[in-house]
Image (cartoon, rainbow, N blue to C red; front, top):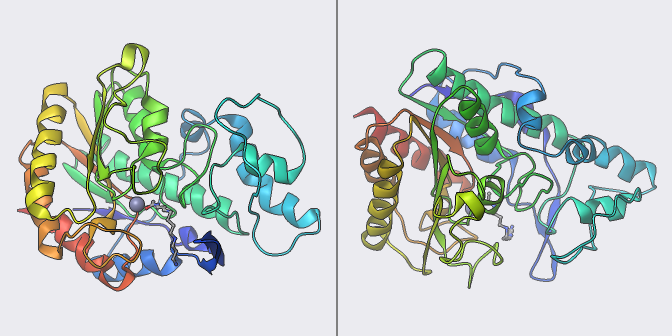
Length: 336
Ligand code: SP5
Ligand code: ZN
C-alpha cells in the first residue's frame, strides 16, 4: 500500500491540554507520526493542491481564524499556545467578534485543541497528504493508499476544531472525490465518534457516513454519535452510528464491522474513505476497547473483501510505541 506523509506535519506541537481538571502533556504528539513512519519505511511527500479543496469543506472565516489565531494570541500579550476558555452553547447567535478569546470559543468546542506556532502549517500539510493519497487512487489507479495524517481530522467540522483536529482530512478528500464524480462512503473506525465528519455530511444524500466507536454516553465527544443520529433532511438514513460499550473486544467489534460493511456495500460507492484510529488498541492510554495488533489485519481483510478502492486516512491512536506495528498490521490486511 503506497503511503504518504509530509515532514511539515511535525511542526504542530502543543505543550499541554486540559484533562481531569488540570494540565497534562498533550497526547497527540509529533512522535506518533514518527513511530508510524519508522515502521512503514518509505513514504512519499505531499503535493500542494492549495486552499481550494479545504474551502470546499471549511468556512473561509474559520480558515482565517486557524491561520491567524496563534499570531493574534501572542500579539494580545499571551504566552504559550492559544486555547479558549469560553464556549457558546448550542443555540448560539452567530456573533463575529474580534477578540482572540471570543474567536477561540466561536471556532472550537473543547480544551483539547490548542493552537501552537506550527499548527496551521502542520494541519495544512496533513490535509494535502490526504489529497495526495487520494490522487494516487483517482489519478494513478492505485487500489488502496494510506495518508499518514497528523494532526488528525475527524473531530473538525465546517467551522470548528476539537479533539486534536483542525482540518477534516477525510472529509476534504471525500468532497474532492465527489467533485470528480465519485460516489463515496466514509467508514470511521477510530475509538471516538467522528462528529466533525458527521456534521459536514449530515444532509448529504450521496455520501454514506458509518461510524463504529465507544458509546458517547461514557466517552468523548459525548454530544454526538448516539445511535438515533441517522442524518438530517435529504441525508436521512445516510448517517449510521454503531456505538459499542467500553471493554469491547474483537468478537463484539467484528459484528459491528460486518453490519457497517453491509451498509457500505449497499450504498454502492466508487470509493471508500477509511478514517482509521488505532486508539481501539487494548493498551491505548486514553481509550477502553480491547483490540490487539493482529485484529487490525483481520479488520483490513474484511474491509478489503468488499472490494472497493480504499483511501485510508490516519486519525487517533496514543499508544505511541505500538502505533507503527498496529498500522503495519492494518496495511498488511489490504495487501493479501
Ligand atoms: C482524533 C482523536 O482520537 N481525538 C481524541 C480526542 C479525545 N480527547 C478527549 C480525551 C482527553 C484525554 N486526554 C488525556 C491526555 C493524557 N496525556
Ligand atoms: Zn480517537
